[in-house]
Image 1 (cartoon, helix red, strand yellow):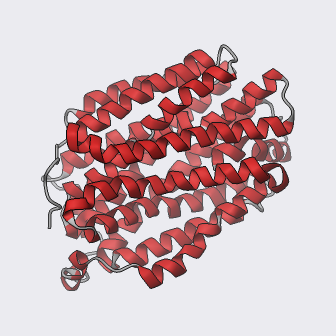
Image 2 (cartoon, helix red, strand yellow):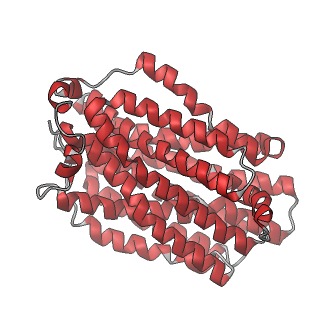
Length: 394
């Protein structure tokens, strides 16, 4: 959702700080906001030790509640400081959702279908993006960016359903008596121990690549479309519709990619699947930002969005892969640690992207250069452990 409302929100909030809301400033402060969000996401690592100590279910409920409440509060922001503060706190919540849900799913789903459900679960996040895009398409003009943040807070009510219907994994329950006696930080120490240190660092690096691609690619698609529409002289309603359709296109193809990931991971292995998706991101980024955007072509941009969407399913590989690399006593911590601290590293990258946009006055060069990160990522993939066919470790 931030990509959809970035331009209209900053158009309102930048002048309150005495800053002109021109495309260059929106690109610069938008990237700063993205970096702040990633920093908040990095603090979400705390949900891992909480889940390993007190259970997956309460940690997941708390993270969802935190995300929903502070997302809604972002809709009442009156200045940049408030907006970034609320989004920072919302990021701490959303950062825990993926790690908690991925850990819980891996531990409760039977082994024979665990791989398949890992991809399906991750598609749920993009169904949410698609739903928000549809709401923005149909009601964006009436709701405005503030109303969209209120809609984004609706997931907070899911905690009531989770409390009634979601079981605590038996794997964790069988070890809970021992786990509650250990140090709260013991799982963190083990994740960084000699036995697991190299794979943890490798996962961090690969997730940094994914995050930079997510923010440089999918998040800036609506912003790019807003700029292209302005250059074409389109009215506000047409711009809203095209920005929504661009986000919807990426979301639909990412959902399709999530459905394909389990089969791809089974055939090509976890490493092969991730390398394939990284290659798609290179094609999508170069095509959308290096070719279509400087040509001011809305049609050509839409032609490359499906490729960006499919490549964006790379996160689904980790939903399957990360639980297979760590035992139950530290699984939630490892999942949260790698998927959240990677945001801190990526925050520096997104800040550089923002500086590049501000310095060049365009999205073209800074975003096109992120394709290099994916090329490096393909090389790092070869160093990661392959776990295809291995059962979930106890």
